[in-house]
Image (cartoon, rainbow, N blue to C red; front, side, top):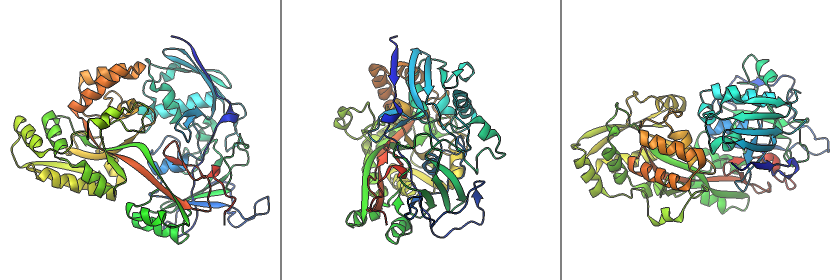
Length: 529
């Protein structure tokens, strides 16, 4: 294999930070505060001006601030300004360096990584290659990151010196480098010296360090004075307060009444009003996220029958789901591959919506499957209002072909446990998957039965195609895999999402980084008031 060397100059990085804002109605009496910090709100900055405290809405409490713990959207929104990764996706969606300075592919199963010198951890440690290798090993042992690290040969990943290590893989994988933009890195000594292992007091290398967390209410971070690249335009605000607002209808109200400065999520009913108000900036961006019906393909569900899965797909009206449940801010899926993926092909759209609603075909497939009218199926979801609305449309659609759907919504933590148990009495679940770059990332994280706890279809041919595609990214094999996926249908991709964020127009350079995250430290506050 031809050796490839990618040299990353830290000065060329376009970096970003996420935001949060302070304020409002704290609902919990329990507060976690970083040792040695003080409340600085209202103080003047060194330049003599008022402190810039950006308040950002998040939809739920992060629950856990440790690097390899809970991996929800909300926890990532907070942790991405505290912890950093070797690589990241920039505003154009390109994979660029962060902690890494350069990397070189040595052979099919080995990469040499060099990290930047002088990276200071929030506790004062200097980050070393040994810390990075240890962090990768910790991620591999965690429940939430083990699928990301699957395929990494942790035991044979070696530290060369303080800034260099050799990443070893168990087999060739085009996902190896991509996965380096997902794994949070911190120092071993900082982690091990904390009795709670950073669940309540995160310590990373990012431009902002942890200050205080009031569960169910706010998480506050402040500018880290010892940040290792102070000239990279990542610390333009002094403090970020992430404020939990769980009710979608309340979010725009809080923005309009100065309760927050930024919304990570705008309710579909509020978008046009905010877009028409000159006081706010609204951004809409297609993101590489697909919401799908996940079928329980195991022996414990009727959905192990492929023809039944296809019949359900033909019965579901994804156009109505996109228009009604998602308020028009989603598009019916033409493929599990999104237009935001690098391997999107226009022919997917030319072929039309995947399993576009056709009730006659649905009834024919049920007959071929030997399924009589009156079949009852269990559909589970979390309590998200959009997903519940989608579930109700699915319920009505399937009633048209004689299938009774019983919907149960669960609190997020319970739901996230249930979907990993095929014996849990459910037949279908609603869930989303996000990946950047190739659609193979979705397959790798969601549909690889050797590594993903979500995959309930045990199909050797599917697995063989997947492993071959993941090894070298061969286009013909990927196409064959997609065709076979569309036929076997372990999950039915319903819609691809748009993310809609809003901010006060006194904030400049407001944009999503990597099609997903907000990094307030990089924004323009010259008109802040």
